[in-house]
Image 1 (cartoon, rainbow, N blue to C red):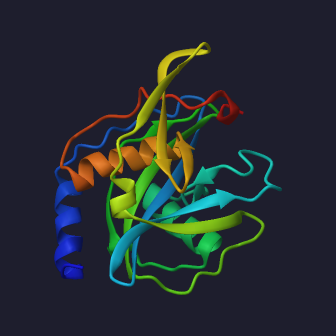
Image 2: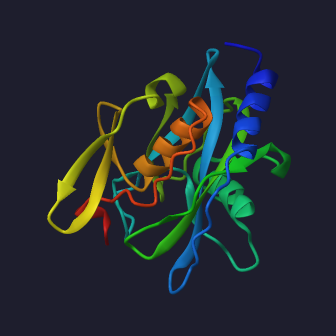
Length: 202
């Protein structure tokens, strides 16, 4: 693996050049997700979770650590808090490298993705009330071409990412696809028009 400090600076530079888009809340709720960059055995990756089956919304779906903003919070603080609450990982605010575009979900949220540098992966302590499983997906596995399918319920294409021996859908797929485009390839690709599958609308 290249020098971690240099990799961190490279990622931060690409994020700093990306003009992230903000979406008005209107009647939706603000949320944040964490794209946490951690390394194991010299390989850098991102933690992807599977939501607990007991959760009221989106049970069993693939996700990034995250949730709604508490009163008075901004997106970076919420992302760091959710990372701590879901996986037991604490990171200081100066390890926030940047953000990607807001993504509006069908279930009534505007999600802000926050990119956070973790470095060497610590021991995780997943919260079983929220997390059924967690994988550190190497960046090489994230660097995949997405699939796009059409559904009768929308004129927007549904994005699917082939990873983790399955297909990951939006919003997680949209966020990770934009991360791939911006951070790995320095392409300023937008994802607001990418659709979620119908099962994720509720």
